[in-house]
Image (cartoon, rainbow, N blue to C red; front, side, top):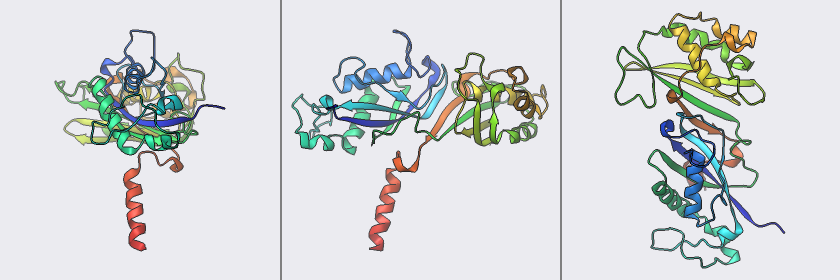
Length: 308
């Protein structure tokens, strides 16, 4: 008989500047996964790497995240050790086992909230768990995702910034915003993005359905490029931004994107933009999982009470 397992989903934020990407690498290399897994195993008092974190997708060195989704599993042996101590800090208590009938009650919302507080105290200040939620076993952070949204931030003014350089790409030359906006229109819909993937990308489908590709002028010399799709190929967003900047600088015509899509040749697209302007903003999942939507659930229950 297989051991009972409880799956937990996390909403994770991080500044990518001092991480060598999100995914685990060799020992001694700081990544989001290595630091998060170490903190989880410390909190739950497990042997190293008993608890493994699965990410919705990888991000490169220097890339940030506000809505990275991660899941991990807690086996029954760990669940049995967990008790919530009333009136205390809410940390994992002594190894006194919980009763079998209490296992499903161990990971309450209160416990998960306190778990987030504790782990955020273990990891570096450039990494944080924003939320945690129990999910069914058929939830998968990567394979259950239906849509991902990225934002790329650009600072376009003559002089660099002292405080925004960590998460914005600085461009000193004037950009043609109208030409940039016009050039993006052809990206919407289902296309083959072969021209917008790195040469060292994994051999996965290059067909992506893009439902948002928009350049916003936020004022005070700040631009934001937003893109959402059901799937992305490696470095796709950064290559799109590199092409977009060349359109804005007059180095490429506004037809550059349509020509690259039709030609399916990496040489038809622009350079890869630097990573520090890019942020994984959110990941969407089927409504059945109700992922991190507790407030909406509360509002629904209140309205049902009022109707009755």
